[in-house]
Length: 291
Image 1 (cartoon, rainbow, N blue to C red):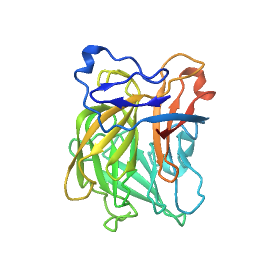
Image 2 (tube, one colour):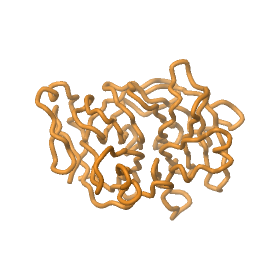
Image 3 (cartoon, one colour):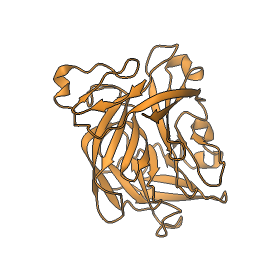
Image 4 (cartoon, rainbow, N blue to C red):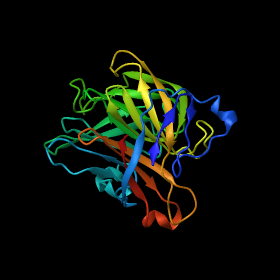
């Protein structure tokens, strides 16, 4: 079934969208430009190696899709305190990037694999009001800029030069935040974002409350006022496209995880982990195409 919105009010779609109270609709942001996404299939998501995020890799040709989970963190990375990996992304020339965070401290880390297979690490010192969380990364279509997100209720996204791709970056130097995306509507617990166009992001939110958009676990579209760059902030218009699939043999709390848009096929994929024991049996990566 499709995930979609129309002008100024979410449209309920059986099996995907929760009903939104009429009193809330008057506060929902306009969504005239929102895309419509139709579920076309799903694949089981392994809770150890496919539970955090995913990325399609274009270079080298015929590269397999990449996934992250607690089981994909290398031992030497874990012993240095990087205990959480988020939703990765890959540049269109094949640089693959994973976001890492510690349980405490004043830095976050981006681990980069070049197309030739070599790995390097780029450390970013936290800004004065920057959260420790390093939930996801999204590389701009031109490859030069990388967006990253903080967990919790946020009104911004952070912009960095893409480590390993942007000539200004080096593993021997701190990776700086160079600009900000200012959102016109708060978002909560964003677990992954990916570019579907030069100024459009698709994001998965693990929002458990539903007070921001009238639904829990929404798929979000963020339309930027311009392409991100290292010199000027841009604004972002946020639209909720609908609730992600929440289907399982167990009842309880689902967890929306990473997202990937494969521009070669136009396929959107989103990971949703099932509650309770069913996290082992029917957690899924759902596939969508634009209608």
